[in-house]
Amino acid sequence: MTNVIEAEGLVKTFGDTRALDGVSIAAERGRVLALLGPNGAGKTTFVRLLATLLKPDGGTARVSGYDVVADAVQVRQLIALTGQFASVDEELTGLENLVMIGRLLGFPRATAKARAREMIGRFDLTAAGGRAVKTYSGGMRRRLDLGASLLSQPEVLFLDEPTTGLDPRARNQVWETVRGVVAAGSTVLLTTQYLEEADELADQVVVMDHGQLVASGTPAELKARTGAQTLVVRAADFGLTSRVEAAVQEITGTTPEVRQDTGLITAAASDPAMVPAIVRRLDDDGVVLAELALRLPSLDEVFLTLTGHLAGTDDEAGNDEGRAA
Amino acid sequence: MTAQTIAPVSGTMGGTADGGIAPRRRITARQAASSALTLAWRNIQQLKHSPEKLLDVTLMPIVFLVLFLYVFGGAIAGSTHAYLELLLPGLVAQMAMFATMSLGTALCEDIHKGVFDRFRSLPIARSSPLVGAVLGDSARFCVVMGVLTGFGSALGFRFHTGFGSILAAYGLAYLFYLAVCWISVLIGLVAPSPETVQGIAFIWTMPLVFGSSVLLANTKSMPGWLQAWVKVNPVTHLTDAVRALTLGGPAASHVLYTLAWAAGIVVVTFPLAMRMYSRKL
Image (cartoon, rainbow over all chains, first blue to last red):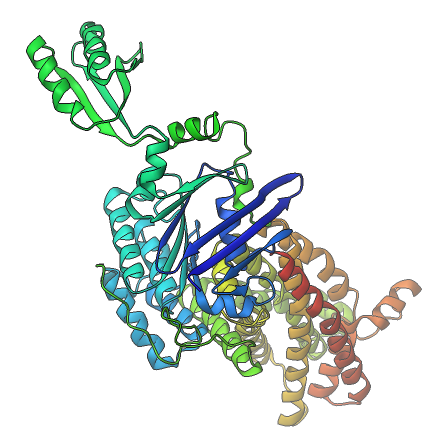
């Protein structure tokens, strides 16, 4: 069996809202699967169903062949979840949190303590290990939460928006951890609102919107479908915007979009070599640029391409939470 | 934090990433008890870190003892000393009730934060987080009874019975407290927010606590309907049982009545609480 996660036609409704409307997803062992979508897309609901925190209203889901409803006890032995909301006890110290989870996992006391100390060290929390978690920063909490999830070396690690609200350094640490977990043989299913994160980590990306699967594929396939990259240019002198626009149009061969208020010019760029070409061309013209970048399409742009509407424009944020109040 | 591999640990309940150990199908009673104790330990650790959480159970018995003793003492029993003998066993019952009230709030808070999500995704018994919370909360019972008895003794209260009877009195109060905890748990699970739990708790504990023999032994001056209520109220029977076990007198019927009530409360509220907890799914 190569598919560790197999979901078929999953349906979950909260009142009148269909948080999941027939979602089928499969993830291969030892890979990273990213669920990409805006708030309310159903990502969190999907993760909570797979992690046995919610029961589906329709469809089936299996983790390593175990049904998430009928074999929930087995599934829980194979998974670990780091939720959107740090699921550590704020009033305990970092070390106590990990010892507690270790004991709950069935480790003998000495093993639980040793493993807790090991994790605290691995996640750079040694100095803070004896302090109450409520004194931790957001990044430290997330690291502790990840440490708690990795105590059992899970077969499948679920990460619900693991880097939301983190600074770039903390985000990179989370990414490193995810790579380490996969190198050790686990499968990771993460949700994210950032295309960059999916591109950085995932072997397979599933784009979700309104509880449905919009597209899926490798990051490269997805990028190919959504117009590769975007060129962003802005003249230092606002008055020269039209000359920059003309240069961009000539080199990219497409009609760029110009923001009249900021002078920001964006255009789809199929070839990275266009960047130096534009620099040379404008240099010859004597135009100085304030901004020049080649970036991945934003989630908005991906959505616009795949669904024909902007992400998160007409859904009720919060439905995605799937948390019974 | 680097991308190092994570060594598998023997003795884990979980399987390994290379599929070495088949996951267990069931959670044994021993595992359930062990995880409940671990979660009770969590509550005790919390109290250790923030002892101010015990302020209410520390001050409550002192304030109630002083107030009731000196406000009602002379009027009800002729003297404060005579009333103290009547009052302290009554307050044992009352405090057993009041000590349960904060449990629902704490549980409701836990559920609204993410901690319970982790508990629910762990391979532990469904009942463990709730049983653990109730057991861990027992620390509050111990504190409230210790302060009540210590302060009462300082004011002149004396036991008239042997050690075994006294132990039975507090043991009975503890069993009743454990049973009532499940009502608190149920409210904590049903309440929309932690703030509302306290209000609901007051509404159901007050008639039980004050519509009883807690403050006076003779209920003849009450109207008939209230006397009828006092007679069926388990708090009355707990009070009378504790009085008999600490001061002397026939206790058996009151003890049995209290135990029957405690069992009845658990039989009804425990499955309901478990169902509500599962429905949070």
